[in-house]
Image (cartoon, rainbow, N blue to C red; front, side):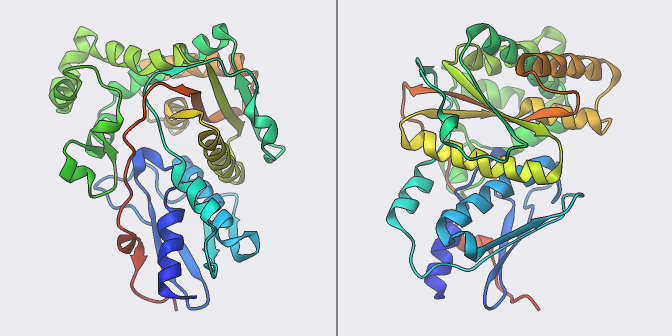
Length: 341
């Protein structure tokens, strides 16, 4: 196991999707293998090591590692509380086909065209406790868009979520080169959109504008691509840590295979995020009522039980534009320079 192949393994593994491209991991050399540990580099940590978004993204990371190193050289474990362990032994060499497939996976936030005539999920061997749904009926797509719009409006009215979003945006090319967060160039913004985003980035200003309905406008803009989507893919289950981890692995597999076949993907996490804030009593009474309405719409449309939620919703279709791709941090920034003892 050479340092070069270990670095190449890590550099390829962290192409896995994560919340707002946060890449919340460090890699520690344990001698005969490497350990992955949770690491949050920002000023405020909304998710923590056992949060849903962390488990989802680290499940996706474990999928990448299994593709690179093989399942026999990748080990993962997660307990009912969400505490996890992930380790791997880098391979002697990395398959060119694997590297190409994993690096090709990306987000496209531009409009899509259809139709998507057949469900791509038949090719996915997912955990049988996960529900994978392909939705192409326009009325069902519009109902999911309605739920997304409600949750998106709540997000734009919430100071904590507002500050998380705008702290993750990278406004300039030099900021984007750091390799984390959301490069503004990856967003589908209309003319003047960048200046408007900068204008509302200051929370006291945004909170005042919300009285004029700006949060509704932003929610409409956020959900409109879903309303017009050729199709959606939804991964749902009971909200148990082991299933969230498996959902992350399934997400990475589906997304990678879709991009390989020329299908564009845009993930939506806002319903799940608002649902977890509701469960943790982080919403006021009015917001909680709207969140419950959105969850009711989602569960009815997706035929979910009361204890089931979407882990992620993917808008899919054929691309109309090639998107700017989010960068990743330099591989050296992921590596802890000390050995585990």
